[in-house]
Length: 299
Image (cartoon, rainbow, N blue to C red; front, side):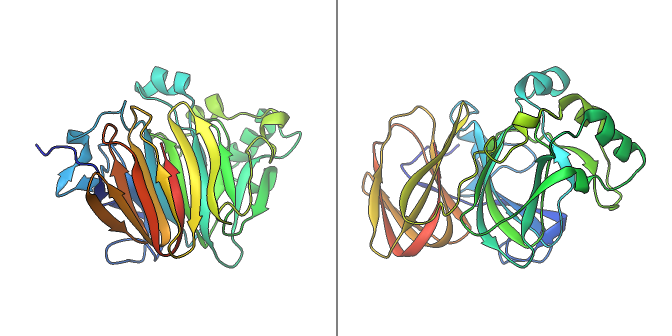
């Protein structure tokens, strides 16, 4: 077994999806929809120096998962369970997540939450008729730099022509209720138990929407029991220091440009669609942009 080192540049685990785009993979390949950058899940752990990081860290040290999503078509209309339901049905934690949009093409947008006044009965009547429920959901066009916090229980579907960074609890539970007639399995009974239809929990303010999160410097995005997310954007030569004040491991994910990380005499450069893990206990890290760059920090 390898030992922890101050900076661990990771290799992602790649996952083909029917809605996948063409930016992800090594080399980039059409149909790869997800790159799990920092992951302890058995379905796709990230790799350090040829070894799954599941052998190097625990869920207490990395209670989150970071991934890139790249889309050419709509994802399914889906929902994730909260901690209580996930523990009851799958002995898992739940899945609250958040999204940072890093590329947005033509007609880029997301469905997020149900429209005001939509009831559970109305929604599932449409599902039982095998009809498209998206007209009962809020739709938001998106641009680079848009951010959304998506609590468990929120109905959603990421749209086409989008690349985003998803930060979530370390959980793989997804309940699909509509899949645009692609023929994949649906999970209607689970979804019925967890979707939230309260009007106040289906608003843009509830989803903590922010714009232009890559406008410059370091910006705090969201705080959850299992993750604290920030964005960064640096001109060439720009720099900042990342403290080591938590028992959790920190992660840096670059969406564009190149970032140099220095810690305890160790130096690594990470570029687009790459991530580095910073184990706790090694002290602060210095980060400097080799080229104009932006991405996210998760602690």
